[in-house]
Amino acid sequence: MSSLLRTPLWAQILVALFLAAVVGFLLGPQSPFGLADSAFSTQAIWLFDYVGDLFLQALKMIVVPLIVAAVITAVANMGQEHAFGRLGLKTIGFYLLTTFFSVLVGLIFVNVIHPGSVSPEVAEALRGQAMDAAELQERFSGTEGAAQNVWDIFKRMIPSNVIEAGGNNGALLAVIVFAILFGYFLGQAKESPGVTTLKNFWDGVYEVMLKITDFVMKFAPIGVFGLVAETMAQVNLSALTSLVSYFFTVLLSLAFHAFVTLPLLLILIARVKPSRHYQAMFPALLTAFSTSSSSATLPLTLESLQDRANVSKRVSNFTCPLGATINMDGTALYECVVVVFLAQVFGLELTLGQQVLVVMLSLLTSVGVAGVPSASLVAIVVILGAVGLPAEGIGIILVFDRILDMLRTAVNVFSDSCVAVIVARTEGEEEVLAKPVEG
Ligand code: ASP
Figure 1: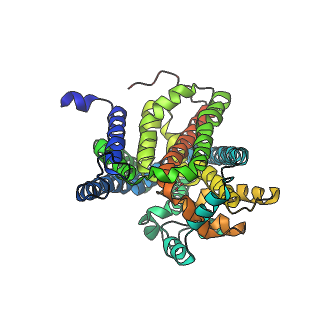
Figure 2: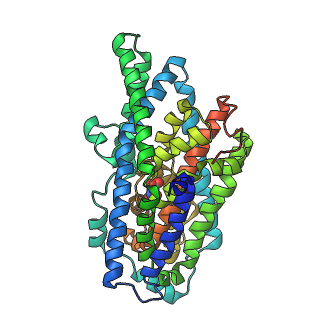
Figure 3: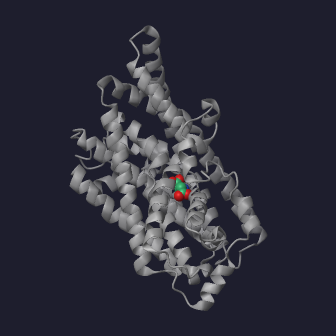
């Protein structure tokens, strides 16, 4: 038992993932033992779902206090060094750059592979899977943290009530904006016992939240098992036949971005070895994959960057909370691929102008998408409407949304971590990924 507990966390999670895939498969629609929909499988899936939710809730519980403490302390220190403007601009600049590259990758892959060119019968069958308008309305109105249009994103950045925003995991962007303002002016405030106490207070909150993270992560293998087994037991592979090229278009473009574009930026700008960075971020990537939530993964993203990649708290505590909410490369890429694919299925080839619009909207809406499971679906509904496609078409891609969500969330988190490394290195942090990663 004790040797099991000494196994690195990432290895425990990996084993849990593998077991979950096997168990989910044995209980799901493909079950070789015909267990699908049996009383046993229904109860087991209920239990997995319950355990997974407990873990996810525990991770989410950490997020608001951790983000507030991390951002306030990081920005207050930067304010004192007069580095806030430079770091802020650099971070947002790299976020926009990586997201723009990711959407381009998606656009190229979806145009080259053209997954929507299917036989007329298959196209007809796919169109039959579109949702009806009432279902669409019911599913997407009032979705947690969803921007209903592009202008909403900017409006949602300013909380009208900061306590209320802090109580809503979909409103993290508003919480971050408040924490940035608070931290900035804390850094500017004249030294006094009150100001010093406040700085020490937030430092202390941060340290305690990291300890709670470590504690919650001890349960990660069980939680991950529950989340993934439940998802796997729902996947119906027979749906893959008509959507196979769509599925692989998303998969290949996400893989290209994660294994070609981002590593190239790490080599060319940060001058670090990408292989070391993958290794450092492995625990966070596995958590992102299992939870489909960048926000819930944030505590792990910070720990992996600070303890394994040696990025300073000053850089990671500022860039990552912001990145988890506004830098979503995988999401932006996914939105773009889905919209162009649906246009192809409906036999409406988008003009160059419309494709440029899709690129812009994918980029902008990905900023406003909350880091929670399936959040990009709402953004896709917004974009479909903007380019004149029937929003009901989203029903076609729902079957694989969860699996692709796991993958795009891992890419979202990886991109946040790459930008943190790039910013840290351009700030002269020599020790970032300088040594092989331990564990
Ligand atoms: N699940 C994604 C995330 O948390 C958002 C999305 O694309 O749905 O990063």
